[in-house]
Image 1 (cartoon, rainbow, N blue to C red):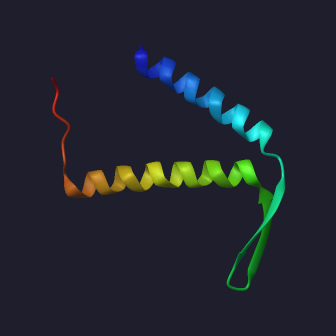
Image 2: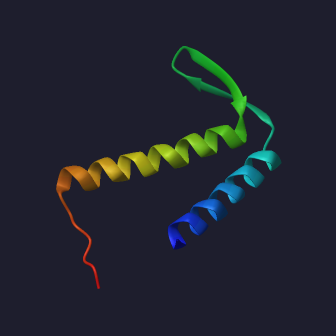
Image 3: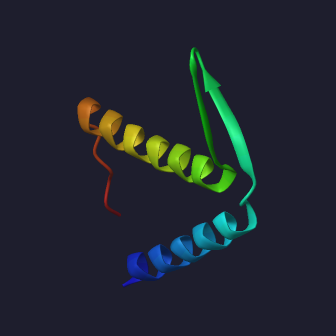
Length: 67
């Protein structure tokens, strides 16, 4: 139940953050240029980091200890 509540709170914070960061910014990488909202960029980076952390945890086989 606590995970559902925390998920709802996190989702609400993300939506509020994205609504406040609607400025279009240009991202340039090598020859490519992309114009995208700043909030979308930050959320993509957030979820990419979460995904990479999950992958690394899966590869290393580290387990959490239940108390």
